[in-house]
Amino acid sequence: MIYLNKEDILESLASYEEIMEAVEDAYKAYEIGNYKMPSRLREDMGQNALLLMPCINAQGLGTKILTVFPGNSAADKPAIDGVMILNDMATGEPTAIMDAKTLTALRTGALGGVAVKYLANDKTNTVGVIGAGTQGFYQAVFACSARKVKVLRVYDNRPEVMDSFIGRVRPEIPYDVDIRYCQSAEELLTDSETVITATNSNRPVIPDDEELLKGKCFIGIGSFKPNMREYPESLFKICRHVYIDTYHALHESGDLITPINEGWIKKDRISHFGELINAKQGKSVDTILFKAVGMALFDLFAAQRIFEAAREKGIGQEIK
Image (cartoon, rainbow, N blue to C red):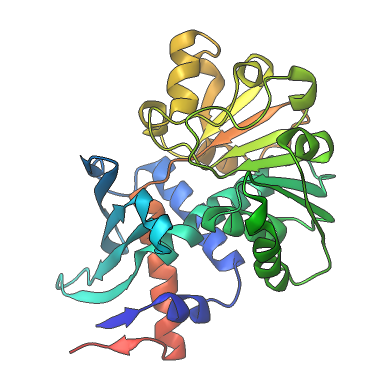
């Protein structure tokens, strides 16, 4: 058995495209039902939470154990932590343990990247990211891997973190891109064709203004609880299509629960993203929203890809 820490995981990957390919494969497996995945177990302890996410498919078996402690940020520690365990399909023996916060960050970044690949109009070359945390970083990097971006706009309500954020993003993009810090969400929306939100906000982080939202591709990554929302009412009134990464999202995210309950959108306008991948249909120029909450199947496919790459390269700490 090997242990893979953050550095091992990142060293194992030849490119971010590898994780996006793993996510696409997971979508395809989801569509044909080639997996067994119970609902994730979540136990809240005040503002903190423990998550258990097992999954099995024909090629692998794995379980992610994750903790979410939002208060850790004040102590300069990760808010999300834990481990991913992979097991041998023939014997059940553990074959790998890996850092779950890095795995989660990568596969969630890849969800955004794949959404950009399939949903953003072919002429899109400006991307805006709202939220300059860990996931904002990976959303920016994966978006620029999925599409040749000319201008990357970023907004966060903490201006003091922006220089560091831009300094970390720039070396990860293998071509020249104009990275700009916006003073407001309105400024970011004005010139961004694709907008990615990666916050933990309980109320919309973009303006309730139809004219600002029309014709854009929105990718919602942040709201994963019923009380969380990143998008305003007006978006759902003009949105032609809404795609979700898993049907669990309908019951987990406030960005879907509230619009459905309030009658802003009907369920028949909401489709699973895997259907779009299989259909290979052309990109729309209408207003589009993709909403992700994640699932264990993504973790399993991404972890398998990382484990195989690490084995080939001899990366990881052997544990006997």
